Length: 117
Length: 112
Image 1 (tube, helix red, strand yellow):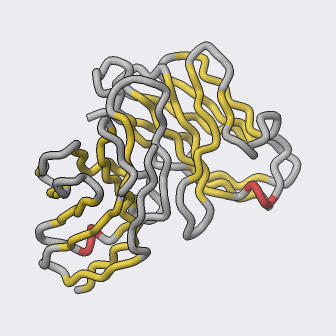
Image 2 (spheres, one colour):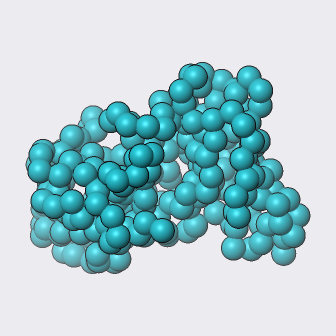
């Protein structure tokens, strides 16, 4: 089956630093990837939609200069949390859409837990 | 995408069937019902989807009412590993710029 990986799985960083999270589709090509964040005991909230070779589309209320998304290839999208603050601590999950499947099915990564101290 | 309503939590005894309901009264004709689950601190996992017919796979069964305004996910023999939050989502199936939007889901606790 289609596999999506994320790296790192956990990261702790100091306030003010930037953190990059990678999302890879391992056995399929993904023209579109999605980034979600999830606070404890809450549902997933869509942050942005990332298309290969073009600018990401951000959901309302998500700061694009804060959460930089790059989708440089059909198998890799990155989310960079810039000048991280403790309130950015969250579980970040990506998903990738299989472009070759006629169903455009979406597959989710295992998530990255970010803790900002 | 149409909105869904699910009970916030449910308990089920291990080995028994878990029946998770979902209301989607505003579903439109071309929208499918999808179910995902999220085990603690992991990414969501696809379970099953359907349009109007009942569906079954190795994980679960999906029963959709004739008017398509509600559905039930059935885990036939729940195990402790089925403890998770289950999300019911309606979305168009093919193409377009649609995205998966999660509601609050149902937290299923399987009890030994």
